[in-house]
Picture 1 (cartoon, one colour):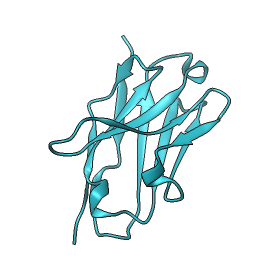
Picture 2 (cartoon, rainbow, N blue to C red):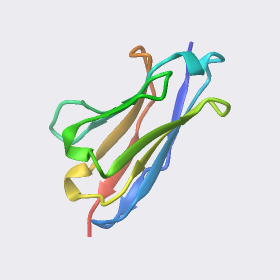
Picture 3 (tube, rainbow, N blue to C red):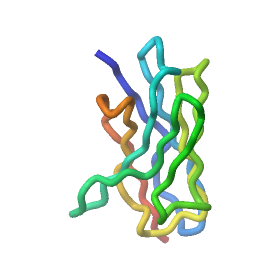
Length: 112
C-alpha cells in the first residue's frame, strides 16, 4: 500500500506564497506521474498540476504563471510552489501518485 504524506499548508495573506510537499512511500517513485489536486468548499476536486517521470509539467489555466510543480526523485517527494496566492486558491490540496493513490490532503487558506 502506497502512502502519500502532504505538508506545508496553512493560512497566508493574498499575494503571499506557500510550498506544499508530498512524500511517497513507493520505492520506484521516479517511474510515476505525480499530481496536485484541490477541492474548495462546495466544489468538486480539480486537477491543479502534474509532473511526469520525464519532468514534463502541466497546469490548470487558473494557476499558470503562479504555481510551479517539481519533483525530487531521490527524496521521493513532489512539491507545489504557490506564489501570488488569491482567496480563490483556498482549498484542501491533495497529492496523487499515478492516478491511483491519494494523500489525506493539506488545507490552504488565503485570507486577510
